[in-house]
Structures are given as structure tokens and as C-alpha cells.
Image (cartoon, rainbow, N blue to C red; front, side, top):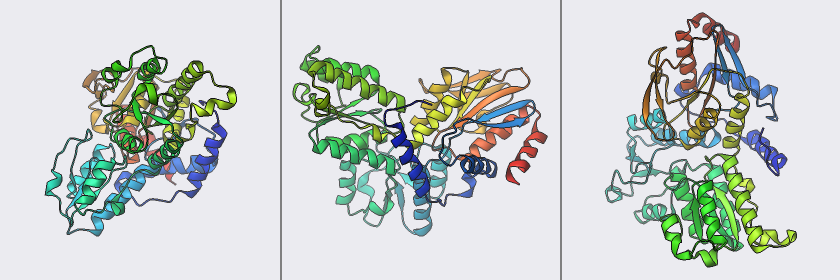
Amino acid sequence: MVQYPHYPIFCQFRTFVHSCMKQFNVPTTYRSPLIAAIKKQRKEADKLKKDFSPTHIDLGNLQIYLARHFGFCYGVENAIEIAFETVRQHPDKRIFLLSEMIHNPQVNADLMELGVSFLQDTKGNQLISFDSLTPDDIVMIPAFGTTLAIEAELAARGIPTAPYNTTCPFVEKVWNRGEQIAAKGYTIVVHGKPTHEETRATFSRAASLTPTVIVNDMKEAMLLATFITGEKKNSEFEHYFAGQYSEGFDPEKHLKKLGVINQTTQLSSDTLAISEYLKKVMIAHYQPSPEDVAQYFADTRDTLCYATNDNQTAVKHLLQTPAQLAIVIGGYNSSNTSHLVELCEQQLPTWFIDSADRLLSPHQIEHRNWKTKELIMVEQYLPQHIPTAILITSGASCPDSVVESVIHKLAMFYAAEAAWKAVQLEWCK
């Protein structure tokens, strides 16, 4: 397991969160009796969540190793419950989602089938004009949150959003931490994908309080460092960070006191690495005494999302199991899912799919390249080796029912349906 400074405190917080978590009312079509039974048994046997070893499902010719943590997180279940309950309670109203509720095709398709319309796409491009809205309409804020400008736009039109705001509490935790360090005079560096809904929302809030800049990855963090040290001229800042900094941002003035916050679905190890790198740069450049380091760099490691960290750590442990390939299931525009694919690809042939329908046959799979976003038809993706060992995990917005359907289809390909039924009976008895 990747260890972070203050990791014991992080684990205590995670355990506290889980002890307080409510049971959400989400459509049963997203549930899986088998996966629910597995998760329940693992949770009961490991209440402190220290065991990250995978769950072994023995299907004879097919050996499945399921990540210890995967699937719906607290924020996703909270958003789904609010969305479907809103639809149920207001059958006579027009209901809109600002953009996709979560990055999962099944959930968004189900909401559209119930009559919910999307005002924007995931990049913030307008699909339905705000001018068409009336105060009688309902507009739901997705789990990623939204910008202050959009909140103000809706409020000006007399549309209340608070009752229908599904923003993840852990995203709001990042916003609150940003507010705290902004009040102490820190410039905020947001580690996130600049066009992602959550990053746009986080940037909006931080930029309203203090000078703010977005870095997408370590490469951009290293570029930012050249402005801290003066290696690059301030006049070059626009060239490298166009559209990624707050109005009036002056590198010469605003890179003297920094704090890093993050898009919660980024690789937590990347956020930590960027934070540690920039801290070292600040110390080397300004040379504060050890007791004065905090005057130049804020400690914000407590903004890492427990679910993102758990899922990524579970994959690292999953990869310790000998296997022929890995399958990662989730929405193709899901940031947290793509990072799980990234981790798996470092060790094994990895196929990224959003449903069992992508398993076209034992010989063909429709796989998504997480870097290029290209859908690729792959031949002979399953090895001839018997038994075949496959590692499986899914993103935080992927229903457990989809994971079960993928395992079931693989069992059919390996003539292991009898073993599959036996496993279901054993786990669900």
C-alpha cells in the first residue's frame, strides 16, 4: 500500500466516514446480489479496511480476482438517490441536469429516459439555452459541482439549486480547504484536468478568493516551477498557462506562497508528487528555516478523497496477483476510471470497457484507449492459457450490476456457467 505522511490520520478519517455513512436508496437495477454479498463479507471481516487483497472467484477454467474496493462511492450513491427521488417527487415539472449526473452511461441514459434533460455537455458547452428556463423548472447540480458563475446565473432566473444539489461532500471538502488557505494569503494551485467539470468548479471557487492556477500534471508543475525560480519570464506565462489562471494573476507576485488542492478523481500519488515537488522548489528558492516552511507552502494532504485512494490502492494490491490480463469497467469519460486503467496498463494487457456488450465474443473486444479516447476492436484478447486469471475492477460511478454482467459473460466464454451458478449460490446463501 502506498504510504503518505499523516496516513494513519487519513485512515482514521476514512474509518469514521464509513461508520457514519447512510444506506442510499438507489435503483435495484444498479445493484448485484453477488457483489453486495462479497462486499458485505469483506467489510465484516475487515472493519478497519486494512486488507487490500483481492477477492478470488474460482470458476474452474476462469479465475477472477476482484479488487478489494471498486464501484459506487458515497458521493455517487448520494447523487443518484437525490436525482431519482427528485424525478419521483416532481412528475409534473420539467427537470434538468446541469450536465451529466456522474460519468456513467447507464445512469445518465436512465435519467434521460425518465425525461431529464441536460443543459450542458461535460466540457461546459451549452446544449439547452438558460434563456429557456423558468422559475418553475428544476435544475440539478451534478456530483462534480458547478461554478459560481453558473450558480449566480440560475439564481438570477429564480431557480433554486440548493434542494437539488448533488455535489459530492468530498469535493466540497476540497473547496472548504481551499477557502481556509486562501484566507491565510496562499495562492492556490489546483491539480486537475482543466476542462473537467470538477476542476472548473474548484477553480471558480478558489479564484474568487485568491490568485489561482491549474496544473494538469507533473510536466505543468515543473513549468510552473520555472516561474517561481525566475528561469522563465513572466511574459511567457500566458503562453504556457492560457485559460488556466485567475484574472490578474502575476507570477512575480503570486508564486511566493502556495497551497495545492486537487480534483478528487486524479491519481492521489500524482497529487502528492506534485505537492512535494513544488514544496521542494519553494524551499530551495526561498530557503526558509524548517519552522518557517509553512509561511511558503500549505499542508493540504487532507484533501485526498478516501474512495479514490482506496480504489487506487486496491488496484496496486490487485496487480500483485499473477494474471494474464486486467479488465477495468466504467464510463469512458470517467477520470477516476481512466486512472485505474493507467495503473493496470503498467503491468498487464488491460481492456477498458463500459459494459458487458463490449465483450463481443471470446475473440473480439471493443476496447477504449484511455489516452486517445479511441474505440479499438481487438482480436484474440483472451489468452488460450487454461485456467485464465483475470483481474477486474471498476470506477466509482460504475454500477455493481455491470461488473456482475461482465463476469457472467466471461464465464460463458470459458464454459464455466455451472461454476458461476455455484459461486452465486455460495456467496448469496
